[in-house]
Length: 255
Ligand code: ADP
Image: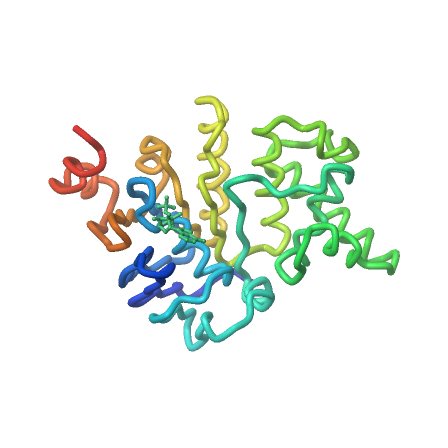
């Protein structure tokens, strides 16, 4: 990947599961170097939208462009090459492998069906392996997991696995980073640390799409917020605008 210089522009994204319109005409722009929060009640289409960008789902309509490149025309494995990385709601790990190996597969993981396959695809050339290992070590340090490199991933706590997943995603030096509820299951203190990390990643030029339930985290670190309801954009704007948006407050923030 390379630092993003152009925004990712989603237009008119539509995706139905049978008769259910999970995403119903969503427009959204992720600017490089910013955090874009995607919030809304359960079932409003947040994760499905993220899955469209990551290539996991193919929408029935709409476009997702970075400059002249139409993402939706590219196979999922091309997304990594385009500098798009993601984390999952439930961290995906190879439990028997070491923490550093789980991070090293970051550069290859999107192109493989399973993590185990990605592990097998790690470079066999010593010099490449050394470089990859050094990158992974730095990524682990960046997320605050230094010292755990050689520990089996299955021994990590839930919160550590969440940070490990972010380290893995950083391995592609993502132009765009998609985070699916990264604060779920974290303590207040850990959420603070997560917020600082995500802000720092954005400050280095990455455009972040943050799907999240924790309103505090969203309002603390996002530059833009889009609120979904029933698969549609209910509101979009700065955190300050969203906080005081009448329909959002009554429909979602519950104040
Ligand atoms: P959110 O992330 O906002 O909670 P989702 O994007 O996960 O919402 O889901 C949006 C809607 O699509 C929900 O009604 C959900 O039940 C439905 N949905 C999501 N994934 C699938 C699927 N694979 N098959 C059928 N329905 C799905």
